[in-house]
Image 1 (spheres, helix red, strand yellow):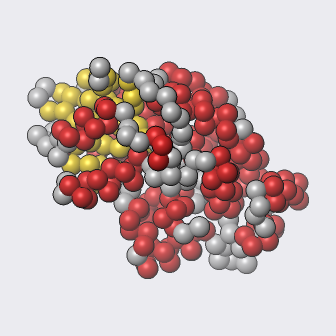
Image 2 (image 1 turned 180 degrees about the vertical axis):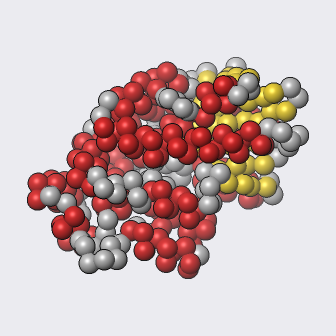
Image 3 (image 1 turned 90 degrees about the horizontal axis):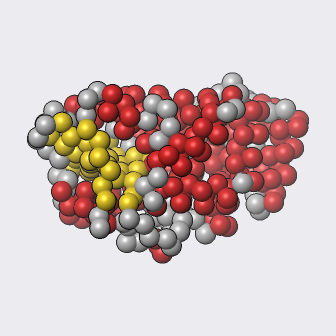
Length: 293
């Protein structure tokens, strides 16, 4: 898997698929006085059969002057970034996957990889974060969930239409975050991720139903289940909560200008404790879910 493909499966919990149509979707208008912008919760992977997207996405896009994404994944093609990618995913100190994990964890990982058609020996030098993303990519492909995501769709559309783009974090920040989640808790992380793999199809369908219907409460319930475990809580803090707080500061700055932005982030960033929408509401902004009849 090349870095560009890899970036699309980083937040696999919101890689969704369905043919259902609903009256609402994961798009909100955030305003204060005359200033406003739009925030859309995305699925990072989505089969072609799910396009066109719900009308609320197009409504926000048409009114926006700038598109704001989590990170500029097009930068992954740069040699310097690719070099950084390799340094983050490969052990540089003589460790191997087998030496870092307990015998039990490694055996479980090896058996699950084999079921997916992956030879774990070819990944011996890689860190657990990378290995598990590889395995999730294979699982999603088998489930038929490997198409262009909402983020990619709007990134390409904004480029074609000449709309300006901005990013909430640098690609360097993004990569460091993704490939340091398991640091110090490798065995627990492997067990957690393998459980998600086992339940991937059911989990995706639950998340899909919430996303397509704009149901934040249902997605928040899934977050609550995630927070019931120590490792799930750690994942939530590192992947979602910590980033949300930094993003809200940037969105707050955007709302001080007349320019209208359409901010696109993974749907899980808009549900659960310390989510982006609630943090903005706490600052006095009015948050209204879009609905196109």
